[in-house]
Length: 191
Image 1 (cartoon, rainbow, N blue to C red):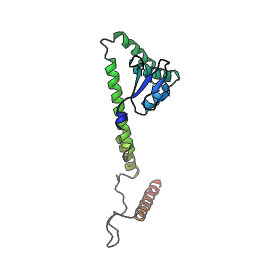
Image 2: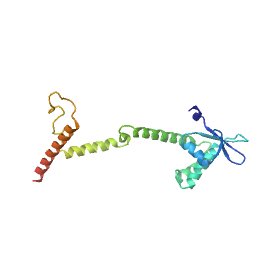
Image 3: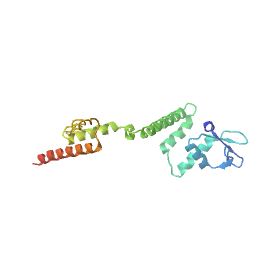
Image 4: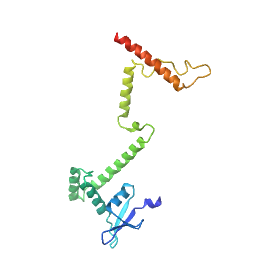
């Protein structure tokens, strides 16, 4: 795991071929994009001069994806990026972009965390409002009983010596009783 903490070193040869120093083989831009999507940082350096070429190759990967129609950056954002280069000395664009992507990563990880909990819908914005609407609908449909059904309570009709939670059969019987009572109420409303 400590190895994954360091960036994957890719060396560019004079022939412009890219060499993965960990696996001792040549890689393509798409391979590098796959490493990054997998969560790995990369560092691309020129073998002869030692210059860091990472930014140049990352921009090339983005340009290739954009040219294939896998557009992530709207045209107005690209225009704003080009404009930001004219005022680079005083520009806050790099800090803003870094902070924006950090917030995006944080919110994405929180969303994924919420989705993996017992009730995946609890993290969805507006879920409480939907839940309240459902409760109001059920209350209206049941004549204002608000969840207190007219059927027997859990301990009211339990046999002697058997107090506590009901079995599924008891629950089914209670539901059938409640349904019959609702049908009686509905038939009275029709008359």
